[in-house]
Length: 490
View 1: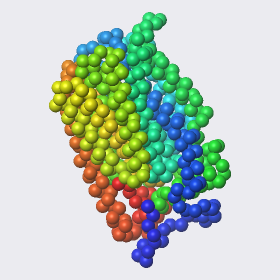
View 2: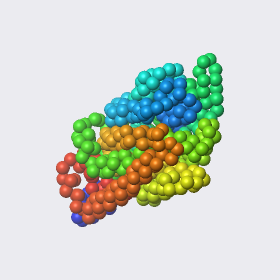
View 3: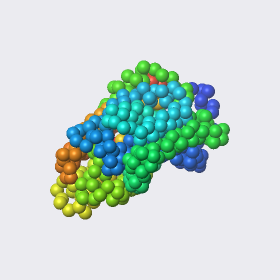
View 4: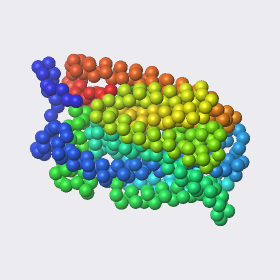
């Protein structure tokens, strides 16, 4: 990613003398030390992030499984849009807390802050099982959104503390594949829990009881094992810890000279994030992508039931499409980091998802419709972590990334106001309105993705020609991702 200095290119800013003295490693990629570090981070970090995202998606989406197990009937919300309102209110606090939560993550210890959120929303999920009214359900969904709201941005920032820019996407895929897996696992679990009748609580409450308790226990375990930063990772040797910090400075390509522990908050970084065009491109792309992703996650059991399958069978039939999405996330994330590209994979995923929705809309055969759900899962799920990695790759340094990622997630999640209301009970069993809006959203995703690829390529060419070198004349250490040596990931 770095350019070689030439006669027409100003010399790259030097590291402070006290940092230069610590460099005792080759400044190359894929050294044995790099590989050893990544193996340790993969072992000590990724399992916890995978579990966090798995339980996050299970606990926000299990209301769709509870719907088939009798929740609407017991809470007397079988008519109108009350059920959709219960889905929607989750996203109000979820959207509002993104940026503040990311800044809190930077201020407090990540290894304490993230487990606190997990434990809190697990307790709320458990309490949903005790709900006896629509008002109680709404309050619980609001609290669930409040505590889950900081997780996605927090995990993106957390990964960027440990891995280089073109190592992050594969790791993002490894934790994000928990989203489709949650649909598969949640469907299997709900098919069993939805049959329990004990102590006056019949069927659907047990989905929340058991899944909530498991989340709480997982959150408590995370308190003891999640490291805060590379500098505080007890599982690293002194040599590994020094190189973990040094390689992140090198990977920044001039965007920052500080370690994540040393960077201090400055409103300059907030303004830089707000003025970044790539942030708004990613927000718009992700907004339209999340319309089908959220509606698919919440309403797949209803879509399958609309094909004529009964409750338990419909729950089980949600497993294979979600498993297909699970595999696609891992495979595409691997190749994305290998070729250092993001946009082309989003383009490919949206095209596959478009084909899936067309099959749902035009076919009268259940086998064709069911095949369409596979294409949607394969296309939509793998595109979402691409965008997570894309926005994180192209914002620097850490505080710019924290603010920018929070804004992107906040804006993108406004799509929930659409996604939760496009599959209405009155449209069952074909759900033509929901399928059509999701199809249109993917078309817009495709167009905007191509536009961002064009913009980033244009900016990179200007930097390669030296057209941005005048920025080095003043405050080169405060340029962040605007530094001429910083190349955007396409």
